[in-house]
Image (cartoon, rainbow, N blue to C red):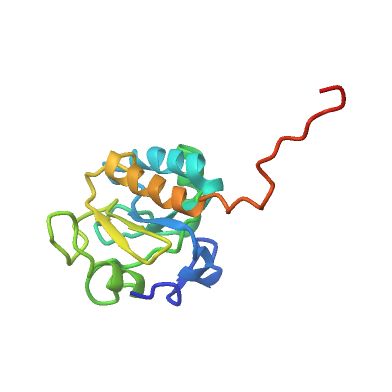
Length: 180
């Protein structure tokens, strides 16, 4: 599944591709400001702060498909910033199901969750963890962002990305100071 060439638009209107974050472990989440699951923003931001400088990012994709998102990008941005202190990238509103479904979600919804079920997004805050290898793991809305299954996969991916380089010959020697 090649996702990196798929076009996306940031919440401030800048056109780019999903590949802007290639090589990172990416947690893609369809978000909605007025959803009862909106407190998950706090955990999403905690993940961003904890792992963001190590090759991880949350990518928020607002959707009003369940009639729980603000109509205007400015209001979404203001809400996310003021209420939750969101620093992770936010995209323009998208359709996650049906006619007009965003191409990224057309691909992601082909991925099955842990119970083997693929298909439509069930609700706001469905999560797709896209690994640097291209593997995708799907988590349903009520799986919290800090669930051990998600965190474990993030840490595993980041540990692989941070594997130490082979030591140079002689680099394991300790220099002795004068007088030793």
